[in-house]
Image (cartoon, rainbow, N blue to C red):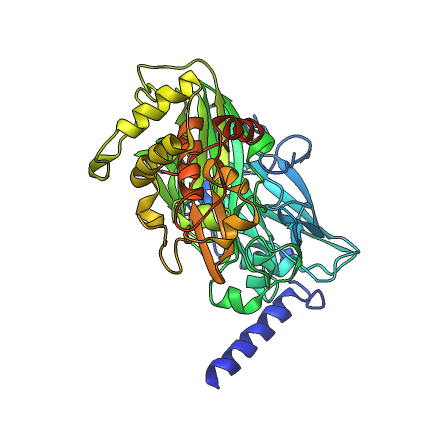
Length: 504
């Protein structure tokens, strides 16, 4: 009971502090505490009044970053940011009503210089259903500006602050219930450059993680509603980079060339989870941890707390697709926290050879490789029989598939579906080629029982090997589905190329 009363009292205070009906004390009424002294704190970043004409901040949508300020003196910088409540895709076929700063998740990237005086305008679109405000972690003042920026739909608020501390800072909505506003996508980053600027790099990108809580399950189609209980339980449906599954993959992937240096400004909006941020196949040369002024070198994975940020630089030497993940790894491959950095350029075999050997290894499960050799020779001569395919397929199955699906095809209850008398295979035997090549993720029903696991793609197997394995499965374990040819596998492989990136 006491806790409830305290919570209500706090909420009342927040509302009072954010209410436009409470007049603020005029600046002239604020009395000086004495002569100006170096406090050793934020005051160190006060380089005097703004110089020159006011400038309008360049705001960019993720993953783009505004250019460096390029200024040698503090200025008055005008920032205009609009709040919009927008329905957008959170996953393919699944939509969500995001609350946004600037119409994107994360919100627009803001870039200023230490010592700048920032005149901040917050506009709340007339179509919004909720009042909003903004708490900028780079502000020295009550609520980071929240108390001065409470803005009803169809209204505009303004306040001014001096950017005293350089670093990379999160901003977010702080209107009650704060967690709900953040969980709906109301966060972004503000960079306060040091007076000398940042070291030059070839590419700068803006990436921000957030956890989302929907009533529907992961990848459930249709318009999804916010689930407050999931949020309280810290059980997200999605963990995403830049607000949607697939926001930074395929044609939306980040890009660089070999020999270039990439800088990532990475934030974590939360509202709940800590991020274990990692780029598969790269090591960060420098990480400015917690968004501050100190860096660590040669970092593999860096923690980013909810409401925190890091800046990471790394040089790319080898071409290919590099996968950005939250290395709390089920979030990456089962909740959506994946992005791609695609690096083009000449290969450097001295640094990374690529695959040098790709041969069959069956370990102690393979008593005899003769069926494989015999089938390979028969395929070349065009005399491959069903019996030879089955024999070769059994040898490959034993070394490749039996660990999960078992020697007898019975699978593992609740984890790996059975191949034995499988009604799933009965429905569409040809779909098995797609599954072997491209993997399978998500819930399926086999022989009346649900399975919700992940089968990785097995595209490292050649067409002959896949054809023989499936022919063996189709003619074993109580199944009778005929045979599969290498040509059939090749056609499917050509139609559905392997997705970029891989787990590690």
